[in-house]
Image (cartoon, rainbow, N blue to C red; front, side, top):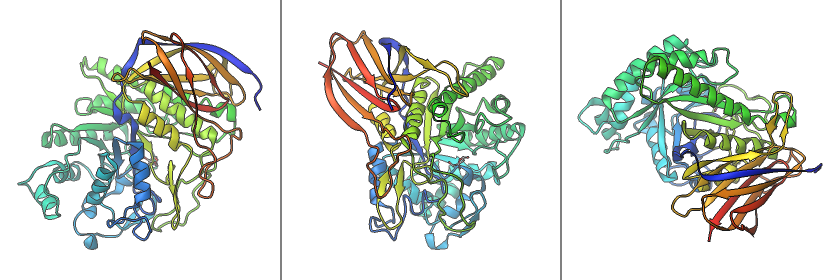
Length: 504
Ligand code: AHR
């Protein structure tokens, strides 16, 4: 129910530059977990499967998203992963017990198969090494297998496996969530920081062109945050290029107004981790800027409760649920938060792409379909390339259980330098009220028209499903005139909005 129209104003100035956006901020994540790989991107029995067993309908949906980089193969999975199991002739690969997810891993999809799929998706691979059950030697050998041209044991092994040219992966994760008690071989910050340093040292000697991502805190809820990050950075600052951060937002309190503001936690998290990195930088009298890799982010669908799946089966349905419009709003707001911090966040990966908290879902025997969160991700990836600009807004604020005086509007703008067009991404975080915002565009010349894309739904609990995949989809509204750089935009309650301002 709409209660009121609240008014505000906002300025977008050509000079309010945040940063040039690194396209890898629109990265994704595919883990050997649940039905992400098996029954997700890969299902040789399915009518849509290509000759390698990958579903073409799923691939097409990933291609449309233009995902620049995909983190692989985990996640928690990587902390027990033996990379040697995933290469060479398929029929000789072992079936393993994956202790991270208590699942059966047949290794039918391995490194080479995934690389081929990612190339078809148009994505680079961001490879993770196992710093749980394994360490420096396995990481070094995997890097040698992937990135060395030839003439050494591992590079020649790759050639014998049918791949002549090196894969040449540029970005490597030094383990995953090593601070988490759930992680296989969870470590103290001192132990992990030392291992990350020594692994990084060897890896950069083998291939100095690579970039390394060290594990930061897995979340702000952990008692070791942010001391973990300070200690790890202190130990491996020299070899790391990025510190990894993860965040999954949910509405477990079942308090809608509070939930709609939760992306504020992402802003605070990024600010705190950035400050921690800069503290270590100052302590070391270093010139080097540590960037962030937000390589797992998402919202947990409101309909997802807990996994109740028998252990030790292949491809159990883990972390699957239906995203509501409320979830999509928080999801879009997380994208806005990443863009607002694009001066420090250079890589981000939506966790995950298919089935596991997925924007893309598959029915085993049926169709692939899109959750509503697919669309904000699509819009940001397609229209959010260029220069991120601050939107200086003044308007109504609200307070809830966890937050005080938070603006109802959150927005960021992106300038496409080639065309001069500006895209504004905005959320109205009020469940009930419409926001009317007087926009002033400074320093851009005249804008002739504004194309508006809006996604909203009156029922905050509605969702898409295989049977009804178009319950929540974006609407392209009629194009409006912009006179002399002034435009009044109306944002519906609990809506995701894209304003595409086009020059004459
Ligand atoms: O994305 C699902 C899991 O969440 C990942 O494996 C892990 O890194 C995180 O805890």
